[in-house]
Image 1 (tube, rainbow, N blue to C red):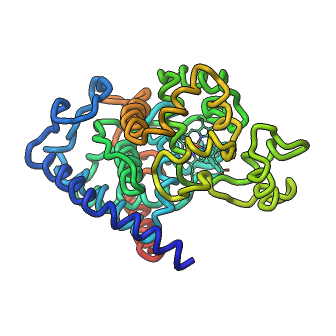
Image 2 (cartoon, helix red, strand yellow; image 1 turned 90 degrees about the vertical axis):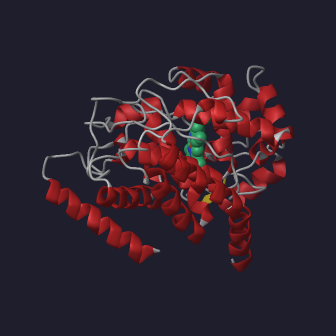
Image 3 (cartoon, rainbow, N blue to C red; image 1 turned 90 degrees about the horizontal axis):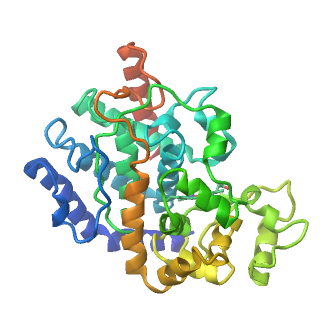
Length: 365
Ligand code: HEM
């Protein structure tokens, strides 16, 4: 346990210099107003109208810095929490767009849909905590959808991945999707490559985006129920036999729903080892393994496995694209007071929840 903590801290401290750069970039958006695209080394996808780099540079200059600082302190306790925030953004964006709708905690809300039951509560809590901080400094200004997008990009970076300049200006939804809509919009772990390609294509993402974004499985965890279809009644022949045996130890029968790491090589680091896992038959989901068996995706797996820089550049590009799916901008939607509750106009009730969240988070860290 101590060893694992030491490794996590080591990975964290390797990135402390880079974090400084990240903070400087956040601060520079405060003073220079907008980061220009041609200042970046990597190509950026076209920005959806209504979004901009440094959108809050005048209305809430410390917004990005507040998010980065909060994420740094959240992850310094436990870097393995980074994955939960990244998955939260994916589940927000694929269901009615990146509008913060997944954050709403309603008995009929998106959170009751099956794929969302394993979203991490700590990820919801840190977004709410950041929102509460930003409501104190810049009331009614920074959307929950933007906070989630910024927090997810910080999580990628703090876990060892690329720094992704994130356009902002998203607005929050006035509603949420029902359970059936969530389940039909999120791809399932048993999907084959054609189903995945169709799912991503419906969101404006191509095969390259699919493979790069699947690289999100380079960290974090999954539960037996997400992959035990590959263990019983018969073992999936594309699974490495000894890896299959080790999974059977963790998931001996369908009544056990234990968690296990997605990337067996470097479970808490954002790197390209997931693609090496795919080549070795050591990934959990059919949706991961299938990327090697399809001519439309195989070469990307091979390239990303042998060249981390190429993976990082493509992930950077595809992640930005994903973060702009069907966003609300301008006068659409609103700025929620509390991310988990739709605005009612009853500001004091919302403030109470925000303060309670802040107390809960302080108690848990
Ligand atoms: C390609 C289609 C995808 C499928 C079928 C899929 C499915 C899943 C499933 C079933 C889990 C584990 C749930 C559990 O058992 O606890 C998971 C975890 C995860 N997914 Fe995906 N996913 C996909 C794409 C993505 C994308 C695009 C991202 C982000 C870029 C992502 C990021 C993650 C992360 C970080 C985790 C670990 C979460 C944690 O540790 O809490 N996934 N995914």
